[in-house]
Each structure stands twice: as structure tokens, then as C-alpha cells.
Amino acid sequence: MSEKFDVIVIGAGPAGYVAAIRAAQLGLKTACVDAFVGKDGKQALGGTCLNVGCIPSKALLDSSKQFYNLSHNLPAHGISVENAKVDLGTFIGRKDKIVKQFTGGIGQLFKANKVTAFFGKGKLLKGNNVEITGNDGSKQTISATNVILASGSVPIELPFAKFDNKYILDNAGALDINEVPKRLGVIGAGVIGLELGSVWRRLGSEVTVLEALPDFLGVADADIAKIALKEFTKLGLDIKLGAKLSKAEIKNNTVALTYEDKDGKHELTVDKLLVAVGRRAYTDGLLADDTGVKVDERGRIVVDEHNHTGVDGVWAIGDAVRGPMLAHKGSEEGVAVAEWIAGKAGHVNLDTVPWVIYTEPEIAWAGKTEKQLKDEGVPYKVGTFPFAAIGRAVAMNEAIGQVKVIAHAETDRLLGVHMVGPGVSELIAEAVVAMEFKGSAEDLARIVHAHPTLSEAVHEAALSVDKRAIHKGN
Ligand code: FAD
Ligand code: AMP
Image (cartoon, rainbow, N blue to C red; front, side, top):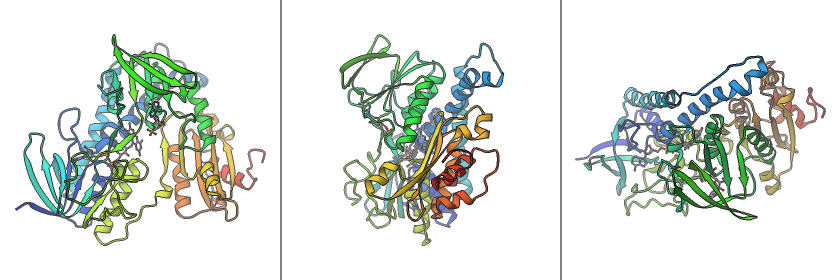
């Protein structure tokens, strides 16, 4: 007889491992099946985010920022360092150590919470049985009352630029380059392309970013995207908009690119190419034909507002389902599903999921953009405040960007908060709390903010909504 659990989670990324831990906390007998193989060839929990996504990219972004600051920020403070060099072995090694610490940490959390981890590829069979195929081909079947599908996503591959992770890189390849490429091509000016492009630019690569769409960072508020584009250009990222890659050929240790824009065809030669044109939900081999679980036209598992697939006891969360492909969104779905299974009141509000892009300057937002509100015909008012007028930002020599608060024109309810500037990845949390509590611009404006801090920009932008910012003309 197959071993029986209350809950089996397939996938141990931030959606799946969090779901498994919460289910176990609630007293449910829980298993988590994951197939990810780490750099050392062993099982590595944590999925894309911990192994080849959020955590390693932030480690490299931070290291490269330290290096870049030596020549671009410290001189303004009267500090000079000569002959600064990057030891790439240590640079990448530090990242690998951080990854190991965190992926190992999930294993410890599983033990502490009595989650049983299985290593192998899980396949949902009819009747909530899960077949696990180990790396050696061995098979076993376990079963559960509830199965949570958390199989995540994988990078989209262009048919004419296939990943070899030597010349044509996906996210994992771009986190493991062993020599700073003289010329790096990046396809796609989305979050991943901009973050990883920034890492290598700061270490000295000539980085050209080709983006097929005519507008830069269309998901962000247009004012914020405009400021960001100006700053990224100053950093030296050569961002070509309306430029669509049509061919990539590996020739003489280089990659020869052909792209098209409004002026016709162009050629460009780079030493490495990062293809970051988006990610797709990963469900390959996940579902037996007769499970009844549906996938949509984009390959995402279809779920209702409670992440239920419509098949008794089968749920799905994270990148594998609709909504933004963000780690914290998947984790919150994981918690909510575990709570729903345990008969509790789970809660996820997709309207207040914060977005962060960890470039320099950072970009962060929650809620709607001005364009979305215009399209929806919602009346709104806007307040902005520049970091140039924030004492702390000037003291840090990082007085770039602004905070923009959008509130309903009649009710003053917060509809969107958008930021570009220093430390905004942390500042956005205040806006999310206010929005989750259905707060108004007036609420943010009446909260005492410590002086001198970057958070004063949020306060002043909220004041500015009703034209009463103190430290700028209204
Ligand atoms: P995943 O993390 O993809 O995990 C799914 C897991 O399931 C994997 O381990 C996979 O091997 C396993 N699996 C799949 N199918 C099976 C199967 N049949 N059997 C067994 N195991 C299976 N998000 C942020 O919020 N912040 C960031 O800063 C950020 N940075 C990123 C940087 C990069 C370079 C990338 C690529 C992504 C980044 N993301 C970031 C996105 C984030 O990584 C994803 O949103 C998140 O990992 C999704 O979590 P998940 O649990 O749904 O899926
Ligand atoms: P994201 O989905 O945020 O990771 O962003 C991926 C970006 O890649 C999108 O803005 C796409 O427009 C862009 N993109 C997709 N295909 C191509 C291509 N062939 N050439 C250039 N950009 C592309």
C-alpha cells in the first residue's frame, strides 16, 4: 500500500515549501516532492527563487553594487580606492554559499516541522495519488487527501536562440559566468534582464539590451519607468526599444545577433547573450491525462479565487497559476491553501502584491498605475515627492528618483503607490500595509515619519496629493 498523507505538495519553491510548512504547522501529515538538482548534484530545496532566482541575483546585485560604488559613489564622499579589482571566484562563490545556506535551511525547517521530503519528479495521478520518479528511474507512489501543485516556472526559450549556458544564457547561466564578458547582449528589458544586465554592467561589461516593445517597462507606472530609463542609461546600459531579436548564431566564440527595429535589420556581436524574454508555467510531466486538472492557453494551471483546480482535493499555487510571477505571491497562496485545507480562513489579496525591481535605483510599486486607472475611468489625484529634497538621500549621495502616491479623487482611498529611488524595496512595505488596511492618502500624511529618513518621501508624496507637501512647491 502506498504511504498516505493529508497533504502532498509537488514543488519546493517559495510557494510549495511554505505551503508544506504551514500545512504541517496546522497538524496535517505533509510530504513535499521536488526534483531540483543543485550545483553539487544533490537535491536542493527552495526552487527557482532560492537556487537560481531571487536570492542569488540579489547576492550578485549587492556585490556588484559595492564594486560600482567604489568608483561612482565613494569619490563624492572624499574616499578613493585605487586599483580596485573583482575576484570573480569569490564573487560567485559568495553567492553559491548564500544559496547553500538558504536551500539547506529549508531542509532543516522541513525536519523541524516534520515535513517528509521526497527527491524526484512528481506526477499527479487520478484519485490524488502522486507517482515519484527518482533520478535513477526508480518509481514509488504516495497518496493524500489533498495535493498542492507548486511546480513553478521555467525561462521561455526562443527557437532561434536556444540556451546552451555557455554563450546563450538563461537566468541560471547568467548567475554563473566565470569571466566578465566584454560585450553582453540581453534580450528583454523585463525585471530579470534589467537586474542581471545591471550586475555585469557594474563589473565592466558593455551591455546592450534589446526590447521588442516600444515602451520601456510597460508594467510600471510611466513616470517611474521614464526616470528609471534615464538612470539606467547613465549606468551605461544601452537599451534599444522596439528592437526585436530574430537570429542568434554562435560564431568564433561570439554570438552574432540580428535584430529588427523601425529602421530595418541590424547586426550586433556579443560575447555572451542572456535571453530573458519571460517565463512560462512549468507543468511538463506533472499531470496524468485523466486527472481532470485544466491548463489555460498559456500553460498555467486553472484555479479559482481559492487556488482550487475544481478537482476534489487538488490545489495549485505560485508561478504555475495566474497572477504575478513573484515569490511572495506564491508563498502567500501557499499559506492560504494550507489554511483552507485545515478549515481555516486563508487570505490572499492579489491587488496589493508589491513589485520590486532591484536595480540601481530600485523600483517598487503596489496597486494601480495612472494608465490603468485612466483606462478604467477611475477618478484619481496624484502627489509626488523627489528624493532630491530628502535630507537622508542627499547625505547618502543617492538623491535620485521619486515617490508617487495615487488616491481616489473623491474618497482619497490609496489606489497605487509607485517609487523609484534609494531603498524603495523596503519603503514599499508601508504603502502595502496602508493599502491592505484600505487606507487613504490622508492616513499616510498623518502618520509620523522619522527624520531624517527615506520614508519622509512617502509622507511628503502623500501630503502632496492634496497640495500640502512642506518641502517643495505645490
Ligand atoms: P519555483 O520557485 O519555480 O519552484 C518550483 C519547484 O518545483 C522547482 O524546484 C522545480 O524543480 C520543482 N518541480 C517542478 N515540477 C516538478 C515535478 N513534477 N516534480 C517535482 N518537482 C517539480 N521573485 C521575487 O518575488 N523577488 C525577486 O527578487 C525575484 N528575483 C528573481 C530573479 C530571477 C533571476 C528569477 C529567474 C526569478 C526571480 N523571481 C523573483 C521570481 C521567483 O523566483 C518566482 O516567482 C518563484 O520562484 C516562484 O515560486 P514557485 O514556488 O511557484 O516556483
Ligand atoms: P518579462 O516578461 O518581464 O521577463 O520581460 C520579457 C521582455 O522580453 C518583454 O518585455 C518582451 O517584450 C521582451 N521580448 C520578448 N521576445 C523578444 C525578442 N525576440 N526580442 C526582444 N525582446 C523580446
